[in-house]
Length: 228
Image (cartoon, rainbow, N blue to C red; front, side, top):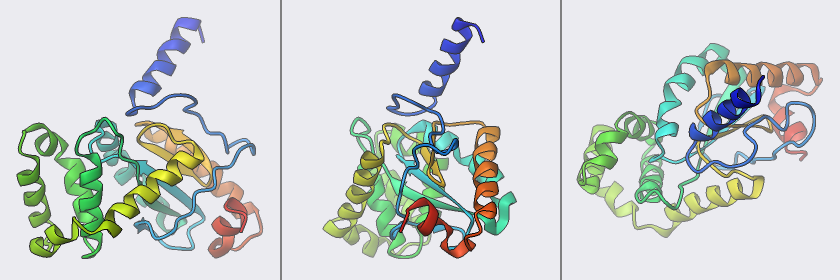
């Protein structure tokens, strides 16, 4: 690839993520650095014994985090029970409403409505964050999820909800996340709103390694990726 084309490709990757800097590659794919991201109590879509764990560090106000959602929705179900998606909050400081929305999502999770709020927020980012009526719009979104809105509103001042968000942010910083969206696929990093082919390549490689390991699927992530 010519230097100009290489620069353009690198710039495109950085522009496809909010606040990203540094390597946007896959450090775990070649057997080098493996990012050990605990699932903890984070929201999970998929079975606990999936071969491949995709951890998404995301910011609800980041447009690239919203833009990648259709790719994930189209791609991940094709893997059935082999893949699970774990969501971790990574609200960026220059997004005025990111942390507030993350706390609101945790309060939705307290009523088992996390993914419903997640989907509505990302699908309606422009209206939610761009109209100048954020609180009114967020409450409308909460109502559309079927939440008990009064309890949800009261929950938003609970320090435990903010602590969950801050704990996710600390994990992301610890493993070297610098921008959103960032994905850790069985320990390998992908940064940005990547095409489906990039996700497919990372997942297929991780799946092949996992199945060849001889470790049962239910133990694979904890034993091989986390080293527990």
